[in-house]
Image 1 (spheres, rainbow, N blue to C red):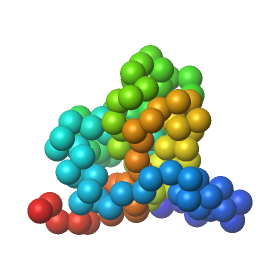
Image 2 (tube, rainbow, N blue to C red):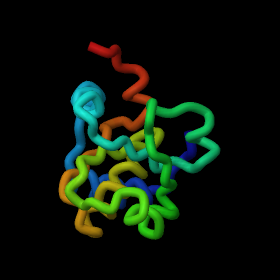
Image 3 (cartoon, rainbow, N blue to C red):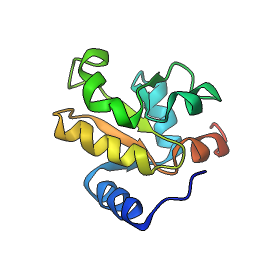
Image 4 (tube, helix red, strand yellow):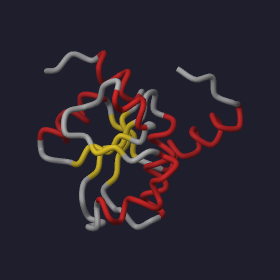
Length: 118
């Protein structure tokens, strides 16, 4: 996993305070209920493995591509990245764009994969 700068970590931590963070088990329940899984990792990371049926829009292109991919701003969305930081930033961006039902997986894909399915 990439080494993050202190500035990036500070931004991500602030975003986590302004967004809803959910446990991997909560995320799995939401996904089972049909919530859209939004993987904001880069394409190369996504291709190395991802949650089944996840939509991949990298953090860097989110603002440009989300409206076309998910036009209904009431759509329940479960964001994630590799470790939880980019996902929190993406969740905050989505909220700023008017999406109303957005959560981020605490610990990202790493935590999601490590937790046993109930």
